[in-house]
Image (cartoon, rainbow, N blue to C red):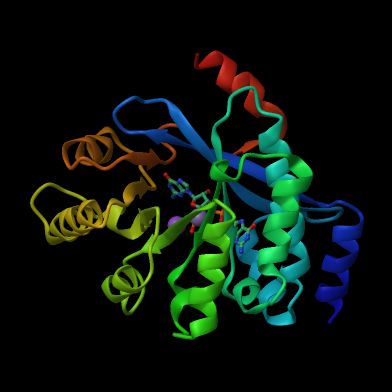
Length: 250
Ligand code: G
Ligand code: G
Ligand code: MN
Ligand code: NA
């Protein structure tokens, strides 16, 4: 429980901060949105990555409070950006099981004044493991707020294609593991092509994440994927760096 107490204290002391990684339109090369990625600026350990605290935050339920803060901070930050680009926030399955999620999203939008269409909620397939009617209702309630819904880490789950049939997403992010293995002839490229074709039929945008090479970018272009994200363009940056970054790319 010690770590849990530390996390709660950390939240009170504003030790959690968001870094932002840009997502670009493949054709235009323009920034479409930033994905908010949480880090724990721990007084002794320094910047702790989410992989080291999100799992405990999930099992302890602390993720609900942390996620609420992330939503509020991300919306407030985006409302201040010099351009009306989007902001993407990752949601955990545990947040979806909590009845306050819709309220927390509405609260973040209302208090920031952010246009709801600028907020994109990224959900992983673990959220969809439970086929509960309530989950589908929650997604519809979020949609009714006017926010966008992205299927994150697509292709890693057990019933990826089935999920696309059941739920209406605005865009899907193809998992980094496919991007890494992309070479023109191999089967991962064929899998990605199939996903892109399907998402076009379903009128969803597609993001290729983890783009690190020109070759991967070229693949996204030639296959007509709408957006790309990855170290080839930019690593996650601090909130304070965004205005300068947008300015320099104009
Ligand atoms: O930034 P980094 O590569 O370390 O992120 C690792 C993982 O942590 C990613 O899968 C990302 O989705 C997750 N993550 C980052 N920020 C958040 C957040 O605010 N909430 C949740 N639930 N997951 C996050
Ligand atoms: O699962 P999710 O998509 O939320 O994970 C986002 C994480 O992926 C971020 O923590 C970010 O640091 C990481 N990431 C983003 N682009 C790249 C990339 O090009 N290469 C690698 N290795 N990681 C990336
Ligand atoms: Mn994500
Ligand atoms: Na992802």
